Length: 228
Image (tube, rainbow, N blue to C red; front, side, top):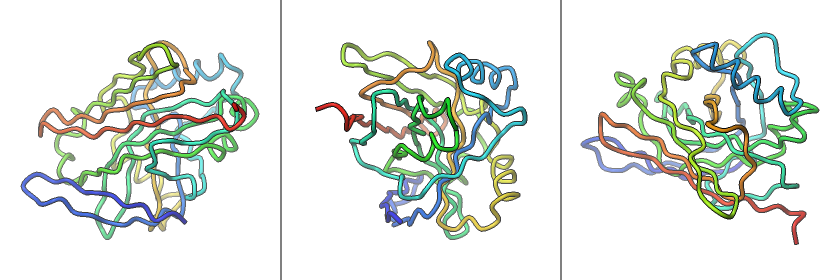
């Protein structure tokens, strides 16, 4: 399993460095708080031929080996795309919060969402926050992302945390199926895109905390192994 190094940043505390062994990734799907927004994302997927579940949210397990903080990820084929999400990491009685992208193979997604989650790396920010520091203003956090297909950068997602299920609800749902969360990375599910699903060569995402005036950034490049 990958041993990933993170820096925990807290107000009025010195930065803390930890090593987190990721043994399992749990990707939540269709985890929107507003069911109309959930249906919007489902329509995006159905438009490209993805068969979606009748009951939501859904937990899609993936290998911990996919977790990475690298600036470049390798994929097979050009039809893969990013999804900006919260990363939740249970750690020594605490819950840590970061930024992630659930990079997904859109072609394979039409065959099996479970398999599509397994085939691509899951990029993570190297900076984490303590959930305790943001719990009282969680809904004011902002998820924002941009895509770049080689010609220009375009705003791709822009939503408050209130667009997704509250963290206690996510954790309760996850624990019902996975009681032991040691070494588990939980991806919160994503928010709708602004112009449909994209398969960019570069991706950048921002987690913004306007209350405490701080940010977490995630940026990476996608390399297609089939392109010489």
